[in-house]
Image (tube, helix red, strand yellow):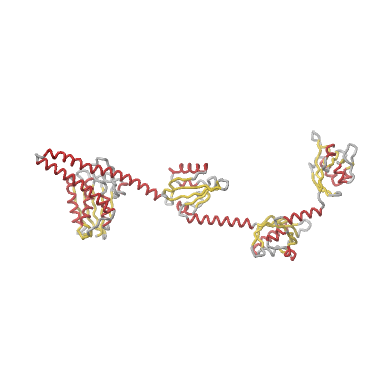
Length: 583
């Protein structure tokens, strides 16, 4: 009781049992003479607050937990009633707390002021389409003014024809439920522009034929959406114009965009590699490394870069360079990742080929040194013995033959090198004449005969060319065929068989040199005409040679407008080289 009496807030207490009320001075002032709370100053509740009697009774009997209502006393108050309980929970009374409310006309003025200052358009409408009143925000939204409002406005007239159906649905909702949730539509601006808006409305309870509506201008939102859509369209156009595959992910690495080049390269359906599906496109041997490198970049924010093999739409795997950079906001946070895949397959193959060529070059230089040293050793020995053999003409003659034979061998090696160099640099000139193909073959056999006989090979010629002729450099063409015969003799074990076959093939003459020698592995067949290319060799090669003979053959045949090809069933199964020349 003392707390109530001391409180500055208007309060009272209703006693259980007899329903008597006592108020504190602040509440007594509201009632103009109500007794103030004291042990001997109680009055019947019905005599002071008849409108609260039933509510207090329901709170006392426990059927109502608490209640709030407005009452008209000498002034308007907001009254809140709640139970007063003993320690054991028994309800022994009701506590009332009052708050002053402004007069009804003042509340209306304050509400009007709020509506007028609102940045949201507010209109008072009729269901027939008239605007009875509106605030400045609505007028400004459509480029109108107060003079337009005084002359009379119609929300139907301000609505473009294509939105009338949406309006009719909203009116039907208002007639049925008195409330229309926010809908999107457009209003016409004074200058003819369309203003996109959200409109919500509710009918008055006193007169359901009219009500209040709110109008929210969403032009900025729609403009931002259009700008975003245009930006995305430009982004897609730029990425699709790039020759590279372009992709993008969310900050957590979820792939959500690929350009057209990705789908053209991989041949997969759009969307099938979103999320983590991209990793399945890599060669099985590259998947673990690619995934680990990507996780590292996501964890650290470091740029992503890796080479891997990506499955092509043809079903093969091609080498690709993958790169990605984080896109950061002003605070440094990663907003997304932008990445590219660049097809480097041809570049990778070129690198491998250059590396292999460099290795072959090193091997060739080692072989060249060995080949030149071999004849030098007997020449040096012969030179050392020559002074000691002055009195023995037979030994001098023998030494002379050794020196001549070895120097001839060295001259042949050097001539081969010079020939390849001249042909490669385009410094060779051909003496063109018509020459019989059989004559070329016979001269080549004559040059190769010593080697063929030394290894006891059986050499035969099958002439099905019927006296065919070719137009070319006789010396160089004999060199080509002699080279092929020498190769066949060298790479066929002693006692082997070599066959030269002449035949016509359309407007070409084919000269095939076949043997039953050591043959070639498939990978060597594909590259046997490359410079310095030979099969597996050891430093003490019994066959000898620099590995440039077939390269020279190919270049000379091409200079004559012909072509050359090699074939072999496999190692140990012999081989065949066919030269085709224009007849």
